[in-house]
Amino acid sequence: MARFDGRVALVTGGASGIGKATSLRIASEGGAVVVADVQDQLGAEVVAEIEKNGGKALFLHLDVTDESGWNDAVATTVEKFGGLNILVNNAGIGDTEPLEVTTLATWDKVVAVTQTSVFLGMKAAAEALKKSGNGSVVNISSMYGIVGSGVSPAYHAAKGAVRLLTKTTALGWAKEGVRVNSVHPGFIDTPILGETDRNMLIAGTPMGRLGKPEEMAALITFVASDDASFATGSEFVADGGVTAG
Image 1: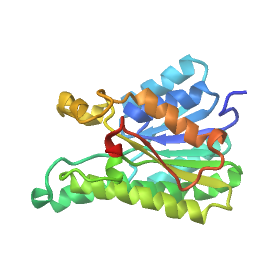
Image 2 (image 1 turned 120 degrees about the vertical axis):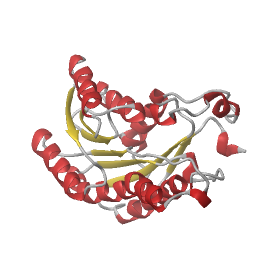
Image 3 (image 1 turned 90 degrees about the vertical axis):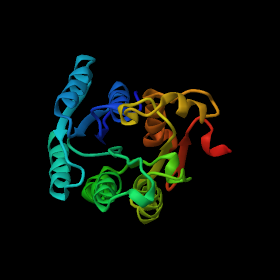
């Protein structure tokens, strides 16, 4: 049997980058995947790729800052596939400026998409995850949820909050049949990097390269699977050695 046979996963930000790679990996190992994103065309393409390879998938347009949207997404997932076993809270955005010039609007937007979304997602999915008997939540934080960089205050604050929200929810659900863990990527070659100087990022990474979305997907699916069945409230870092120094 594949690791995710009979399991259902909902992946936010599933249309591109780490979310896309994770959706494809879970589907390749037998899981039904709900690809949730605001990028409709790209999300539909991920579902088409999964189905082309014999997998099961559904695209849902989801604004992760919308509580009613979250409730609808979970209800649709359960209706379509019969339950929900895995929640991957991957959606997020960043900021790049120092604190002194960061606007309140930027702060509020980054916190809403990157932090509040994780709270809303776990709250909406709680009942279904507990009913599954083998629920697993993987919240995507960042190495910058552990250490600082001098800029991007909203992103650091939000990702740090995701780290501790993960731990406190893990303790609350430890005897409810749901594991909750966080994954902390370093610099990964995805669209979120935008126009960032990749050579600068590579120079700051001890391994001398950027991470690949597929490498993060491999870690996320390990954490989501029964291979990590005794891990809850844990943080899994994959940053090419950045935080080791």
